[in-house]
Length: 288
Ligand SMILES: [Fe+2]
Image (cartoon, rainbow, N blue to C red; front, side, top):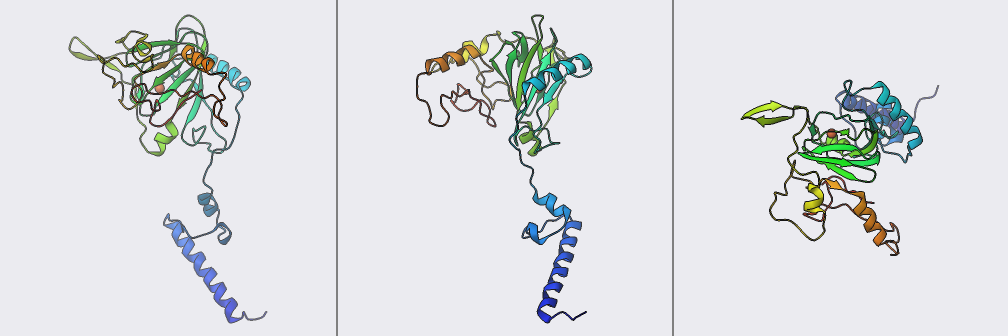
């Protein structure tokens, strides 16, 4: 055994001192921001330094569809009013997130199921996939929607899910829930009430307060804005137009099909808040 040279000794001592410092920091729930992954050998450090990131991933509808059917058989509306399959990104699991700030969920409703109303701080859209009778009542506007129709349920707007018309229907949801969760701002409310004879009464179904074509009638024409209605609906932060019909989107895409479009994105049409021209939610933009 040979004695360490003074220079080596200094290095060894510094290493030991650093290790002691790191141990003391972890014990007190702190992280040495100057540490590099090669300079440290703790598992905790690797975990701290490995930020979870969404990875590119494809979910196939041929996998999703049979699982939706099995869920519909096994989980009745009485068991849960939230029978949705959330697409969880393998890079972010177990967090319920498809990408870092949003998740997508598929939902199959059996014929003529109507769930009780609820509201929440995350904003959501519902996009019709199959069946003509997807149903969502949003703030008293009863919307029946089919394939390609997009319905907004903005933050803090009372809404429910369901189907009418005697056939199964599948829709897709997109929520900004992972973002709102990160901001510690998620809240849900399931106690829907209406005033009846001057008294607040809990209700399982929202009474319609708007005609069912309200969104199209008031906001369906670009460049024109009715003055006689209140444009703040629900939480007041999102587009007051709650339904975007596929028919109009398809007509608009068709009208531009011989254009060159953007060299990278091609022909893209945004869904906009008709009162501002901006995105439908402050947190998510949608387009086709
Ligand atoms: Fe909801």
